[in-house]
Image (tube, rainbow, N blue to C red):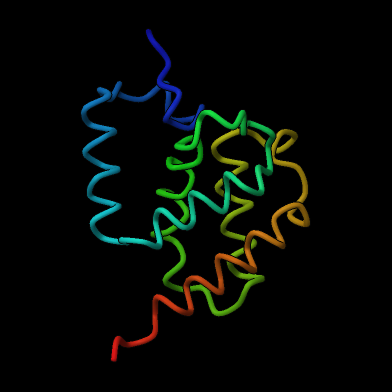
Length: 123
């Protein structure tokens, strides 16, 4: 069985998804979250909490952004966002690779700021 690099390791033993399925899911997430999706992926890429930024793979954190954003609706603080982001990185990579939640505080604070802006009604 071919392992899909866009799926968490724990999901790689489930029914295989095609590249087209993954791209369609990503397209829907971008449509739903708009700039917040791209901004979150860019923040994760810039902070690079697990060391996979090689300067040529700018879409590297889109999968993680796509699993983080749907979970943010209940967040009430940057600490809540940090918990979500850390949990998703543990799910995508594993606990030792993800490291401690402290590693995610700065990026979580920035995601929280983006989330606040996105929640403001447009004038």
